[in-house]
Length: 253
Image (cartoon, rainbow, N blue to C red; front, side, top):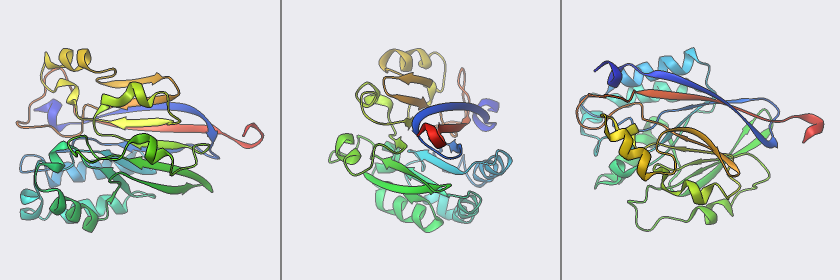
């Protein structure tokens, strides 16, 4: 129960070979699985962590809801999520995971957008940080059969500028490591959630959990802020990542 409900903050600092006038502080919370067992209190706890750690932006790479919005609606969690969105200078950007696509995609999309979450469903968007453009690229989970290829999404951005990809599953990391992606954020695996499943996760993925610099980019796979099913973790921990992205400044650009 403790490992499921009490998150740890994992701090990481990365350097990219792209222009960035000042460091960008990215918070990452994947796999919330918002539902009856993980609700308003967990959202408020995340809000507190964002303020305490002075994050610029919160990125959520999938599985935000636990299959539907019934508990989200019944307990009026939209109010808590809206306050969380307002607490971040650049707000919240998210993609949908497999649990967001199990038959209730449209209600989930509508609920998240109404609360202020900016969804990237096979879409790209440019934000500005201290005058510097940064590209956010979001993919549907591969449960969506007709999803856009990463290369086609990258064709819509200026890859000489920082590029951050949200991709729920870490299954395409080997391919993405050869693309001009500076940072990829994934979840899905829960780091196995319950021992010894973490060994299986590690065996079947290029990177099943944690951080690694691979090829041209940096890759983070989170164990998730929430949990799936019962509130139980063994050998894994509820977490958020706080990633400081440092770029090239001034004459080095």
